[in-house]
Length: 196
Image 1 (spheres, rainbow, N blue to C red):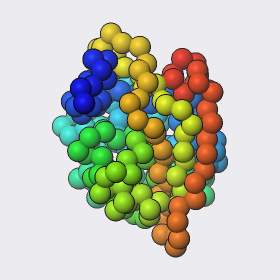
Image 2: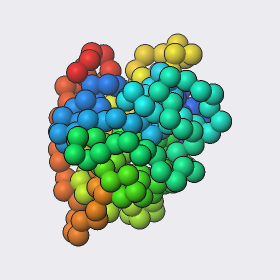
Image 3: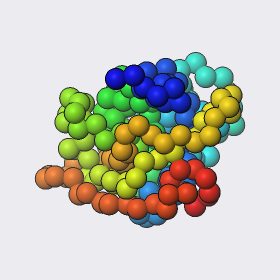
């Protein structure tokens, strides 16, 4: 299958800078009753929290607390469950997705707070079956998300080529199947055309 030109980067995993609309992140936080205080897979233009972790070897910026989330032993030492803190990440889609989901699951236990991973619903992959069923919940987002183009691309939000789900990992492992939470976000918010 050949990808449509506007989504060639998404299908090839060559461009990881697309951002999640803030309204989508706010809707997930409201559904869970948490506040995202760290974005563990971000760039300055796409960070969804004041503090964020950038890619390997990223130069210092305001809010940057580390680089290369996959190699950090602990993402954050200052967040607490008592304050309703949580970690968000929309990791690069592609080959790195499995490693980021596994790391998110680990960091929920290490940091002691919920970690929410926004990713494509990829039940056709081995990594999905290895990790997604250990999530406490799946937030199934109705409709496709319109991810925001990075500032250096002359593009408007483009609808994702696959459905999205937020995997919610908790500090303790729950027995049984994940709870499935349907989440309907207004189309204009989901597509990044208005704030939350």
